[in-house]
Amino acid sequence: MANRGAALFVQAMLARAYVRIVGLGRDPAWILTDTIFPNLGMCAFVLLYRALGAPRGYEALALVGGVLTTFWLNVVWGMGAQLYFEKMQGQLQLYFAAPCSRLAILSGMALGGFASASLRSLVGVALAVWVFHIQVAAFSVGELAGVYLLTMFALYTLGMTMSSLFLLYGREAWHTANALTEPVYFLSGLYFPVRSLGAVGAVAAGLLPLALGIDAIRQILLGPAAQGLLRLRWEALALTAFGLVFLWLARVALEHLEGLAKHEGRLTQRWQ
Amino acid sequence: MALSSGSGGSGGSDMPAVETLGLRRVFKGSRGSPEVVALAGVDLRIERGEVFGLLGPNGAGKTTAIKILNTLLYPTSGEARVAGHDVVREAAEVRRRIALVSGGESSGYGILNVRECLWMFSQFYGVPRAAANARVDQLIAALGLEELAKTRINRLSTGQRQRMNFARGFVSDPEILFLDEPTLGMDVNAARELREFVLQWVRERAGRTVLLTTHYMAEADQMCDRIAIIDHGRTLACDAPSALRRAVEGGQHVELEVLGASDGLAEVEGIPVTWGAPHPERGTHTMKLRLADGGRLPLVLRALEARGVAVRGVSTRETSLEDAFIAIVGRGLDDVGPPP
Image (cartoon, rainbow over the protein chains, first blue to last red):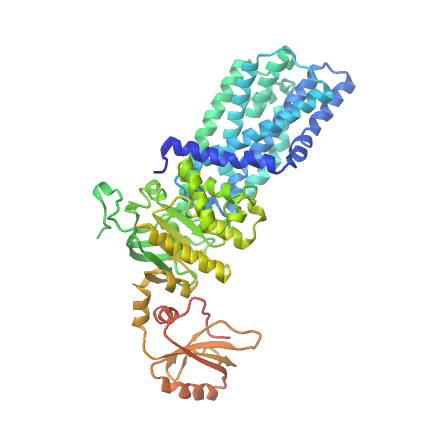
C-alpha cells in the first residue's frame, strides 16, 4: 500500500532533497566554484577594510554578507531556475503526473539546496576565521540559529516562488533576475551596513529578505557595531512573514502553472 | 450517455481500466493560425488486463489522448475515466494508479546512479521504503541493469538510459501503464527484451493494463490484445489485430520500386496507390497497392510503362497489420504523399 497525504509529502521531499545532498560528494568542483570563487568578493572587502584601518567589526560585517551570497546564488539559480531546467530536460511532465504534491518536490529542492549551501557557507566561515582571523562579539547560539533558519525559510520560499515564475516567463525571467543581481546585492548591503543607504534605501532594503537576514545576523554577531536597520525582533518577525507569504505564493503559483499547462497544453514539454 | 461509474463515482476493480466518451481536445492557434482539433470525439473502452494499442500517423491525436489520460491535459469536452476515476475531477486518484513512460525521455539526474534514480521515483509514488528497495532490485535484475546499478546516469549510453527510463515506469507497480513509443530508437534486441518484459509483467499480475502507442506495426501486432486506429482525432477502428487483418484480407499486396513516377499519381488502372519512403540513393520510390486479383499485376506494370514509370523491383506479401492500417486510414504510418 503506497503512502498518501503528509507521509507522501515528506517522502517525496526527502527523495528530491537527496539529489542535491548526494551531489555534493560526487562533484567536488563546488569547493572551488561555489565556495572559494564567491567568497573572493568578501576577501577583497576584508582586505580593503584592513588596509583602510577600519574597525575590526567591518571585517565580520563583510563575512556575513559574503556567506549569505552563497545562499542567494543558490536561491536564484539553484531554486529559481530548477523547474525551467526540469522542463528543458523533459521530465517536468513526470513530476506533474506523479501522485505527490508539486510543492513537495519544490520543498525537496529547497531543503537539499539549503543543506548543500549551508555546507558551502561553513567553508566560507572557516576561510574567514582561519585566514583572516575575523573576530565577532559574544553571541547567543540559539538566537543565531533561530535567525539563520528564519532567513533561510524566507529565502528558499522566495526561491520556490521564483521557480514558477522562471518556468512561466522563461528567458525573460532569467534575464530579469540577472539584471537585478547587483541592485539586490547593493540594497542588501552585502559588504557595508545597510543603514548607510539612508532612509529611502533602508526602506527598499527592508523589502528584501536577504537584506533583513544579513542585518539580523550581523546584529547578533556584532551587537551595536552592526548598525542594525530595525530591532532584531522586528526583523525576525518580517522574515517569518516573508517566508509564509512566499510559501503561499509558491503554492498558488504552482497551482496556476499546473492549470495553465493543462488548459493550454504547454509548459510541461521542452518544445511547448 | 455517461461513462460507467462505481458507487459514489469512485473507482473499483470491476471498472474498465480506461474509458472515454466523446473525448475532444482543441488547441488554440498561435499568432493567428487556425485552431487545431487534436481529438474530435474519441470513444474507447479498455478492459483490465488488456494490452491495448493506439495506432495512428503523426498528428493523429495519440499523444494528446495519452496526456489527457495521464492528467497532464484537460479535455475540451467529453469524459475520460482511468481506473474508474475521472481524469479532471479525480486527478489525484488517477495518478496513484498510473505510470507513464515515453520513448526518448530523459528522467532522473545525471549525478545519481541508476539505482538511486529508480528509488527516487518510487518515493514520488509513496512506495514504502522496504518495498521500494525490493522492487528496485527486482527491476534492475529483470531488465539486465545489474552491472549499471551503481553507474551514474550521465555516464550511460542512450540505450542504457532508455532501459532505465523503462524500469522507472514499473517502480510504482501501477495498475495502468502508459507506454508512449517506448522502444523508439532502441536496437532490435533491446526492444524485443522490453516487449517480452511487458508481456510477462501483465501475465504475472492479474488486472494490470498497458496502453501502448507505437510506430512499429510489428510491435503492436505482437503485443496488443486489441488495437484502436485513430486518425485526425477520430477512432476509425478498434479490434483484435487478427480481426483487423481479416477485415481487409483478400487480394494481393504489391510493392513496386519505381523510377520516374509521374506527378501526383494516385491510381493505376483504377487501383488506389499509396507511397512509401523514397530511396534517394537509387532515385526510386516505393509504390504500394492492393490487387483484388493477382492476375492484374501485368496490366498494372504495362500501364505504368505506358506512363513512363520504370519498375525496378516487385514484391508481394501476406496481409499484415500495416495493410489493414493502410486500408482503414488511407495511408501508412510513415507514408508520404506522391513524389513531386
